[in-house]
Amino acid sequence: MTIRATLTIGALAAPLLSGCAASDDASGRFLVQPERYQLYNCRDLAQAAQVIGERQRELEGLMAKAGVDASGRFVGTVAYRPEYVQLRGLMNEIRRTATEKKCKFSPDEAASGARVSDQAIR
Image (cartoon, rainbow, N blue to C red):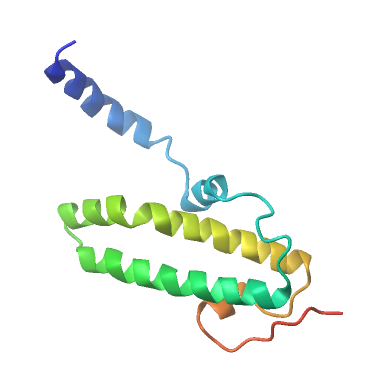
């Protein structure tokens, strides 16, 4: 098969397969080890949520800075999107674990940098 034929097949298959792409949350779950934060206490979960939230905001800024034209979106998707999706999966796992452990803090508040309690509800 020639290079031209291979490129043509790839160009035709890409739009067809793009419909199979999963949402960010589904992809994030796929990229994160289940029960990754099981041994964390509420304080550790709050700290992890804060660090992940800071990095998510940084990546959002970088993707926005990459531009709104097609080439900028492509660069943002290739360079920053995989890490961003993984961080969303980590944050979802922190939410699940914090709920399971009945922590007082909201992972979303911790991610925003707000001062939150790191204690468990007794």
